[in-house]
Image (tube, rainbow, N blue to C red; front, side, top):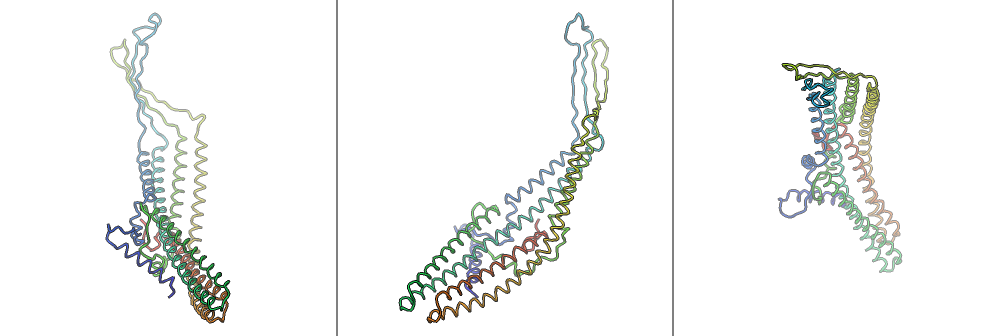
Length: 419
């Protein structure tokens, strides 16, 4: 087992020990195991925003059930003016109540449309939670990948340091030119620079993970190897594209658009206003009851534009729902193929690593014995580093494919349902 893998596991073990250390000891905060972090992240701002959207839709659905409010009118006639031309005894006072009455099923259509909006908000919430769980897993794995890149860079620095020591010894013994030592020193400085870049990337990865999880302070490390945990379990089983959260969201958007068409069609029917009042005549012995009905004439506005717009939106949503289903089917097949390809790539990379390690060992022995030039040793070391990088790249590719498959199945990367 090479030093890169040993160091990566050592980092994960150290993170676990820090996570289990009692609180209040002043030690840096470590991200807990992924499943625990996912549970704790339910209060993250991104998840809270999804809950707020659902609450907003429910409030609007409740408001849709409200009926139009009545209005009260108080009218006075003949209470002022020129008394010579306006008889003072004809003063009238009318108290009237106007009640709008919705016709054509407007209220029922409005309620159904708002309930469809609630279902749409809930579907968006589920899809958003699944997307959040996937992004959180990618951020967690990103921090782990950064740790592994540091371990790889540290091995590169260690090996470049060993090469430089050998080069210096050979130069001192007069068996190599000074140029070989300078080449080895340049190689070491390059590896040290790569190591510093890897450390900076790790800091950024941990900061992004903390921000996504809603932690007020950046993490100093992670408590487990999510990639190793994922590799220890089989990928998600067969995925039914119709059960994909993305497909269900598209269907909910289509249903909401269909309800909106009905609302606009119902609005084309004019409403009436019923009027009922009491009129007090000064010359009469008692009040008089007045009643009436106000009916608008749909001469100029028949809501045709809004109906056409709603129907066009419905057509677009139907097309998006069909596209979402096709994409889910293609995504499932692609993810399964990519997982298989990543597995084969990883197996080939591990065989290549064994060959590269042996080639580096032989090249170093030959160089120390003065039987091979430095360029061959540097080439062998580069091939060894490339082999280690291919293994890491295969792990990343497998992780991304399994993350996509888990998202299509509505699960977290570790197989837990996302609520």
